[in-house]
Image (tube, rainbow, N blue to C red; front, top):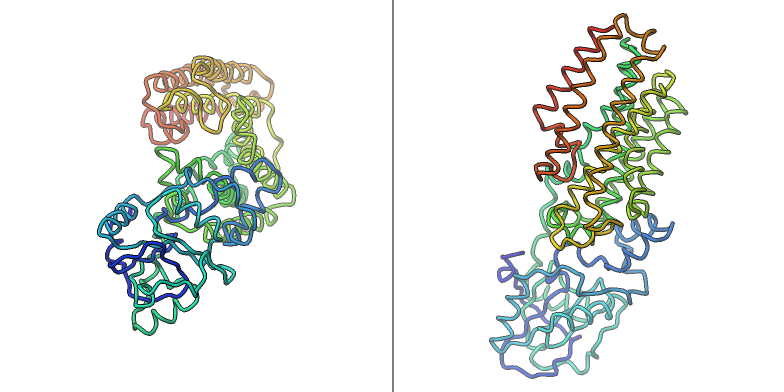
Length: 468
């Protein structure tokens, strides 16, 4: 909500709007972007339509770069799904109540778009748009009241015939552009707080006991590459999910959905993050670059359609975590342990299912998880599968302790049995907290903030060091 709307009124003139209802009050001309939450002019149904096709990435980035207005067909735009600035609309109702005509206009959106917004809100006397030099009204039908002057709300003078020049003659400049997004918004957009998940790249370094400085430096570079690649994927997902995020009680505060960062700037950030990520990846090795590419393709496929298929979505999430572990092994050229691969798949399948369970439990309508294939009655089954996957991971760990592989790496492998009850405690605690509603929508981030989880991880680390 922009409470400063009344302070942004400018004086100007125009000869491109037609007033069907003559009024004694001074007219008010409003740019269409001023009645919409920043960024919400992205056509809602265009976004949902392109995500079902393989060309979605190209279309979304084109829209983010400001090319959406060049797409001629916006017939799918549904104004009832857009977010409007309630403060601005309330102010316009007050102006209309004073007997002043209110006009909606735009220089960046075609007439059907402006017409749809105007008719949906129902507070405008008339409307016009001229991205191609035309408007919904002829200049020779211009009412006398607009020729004498009008007030204007908008970020800049709209390019209707005579409009900008009249504003200039009045000596009034358009209000300053919105302040650039702060560091906090950019960090939130890049999901820097999620970078801790990429510490999984270091797991092969630790389990293979490769503690040399060169291997450690290579692993750290691999972590950076995965972090940058993940940031690019997260931003792309935010652009594609802009409408669903705006309808979500928590995700509506994300930088793109809230309008804190323009989609065009976000698209530029995607390019920079991915170029840097693959430059580092190829520097490490071509093989590692291939793993990084596979990770990006899989996470992009997840954003486009796989996350909408029940169970497939959690399998993909578990695989994405495991790919980080595989990437860590490839980076330092050590064989990927089959035991580690199996343990990783099951433990992260469990956490992904916990995430879905929490999301199902938090749905206000209690019917279906938005943009997913789950229903309310699936919640108990999801919880059962989460517990089964978690404790299967413990079983795999016990089998690993008894294998020939562990005897080659540890001098006292029997001490590793101490890790089993610690793992059982931690998994059971996560399940219990999820059932009580004490975990937010990401159990991995919960674990990173949870003191007991850190104690359990530290204890397992100490036991493994002593067992060497």
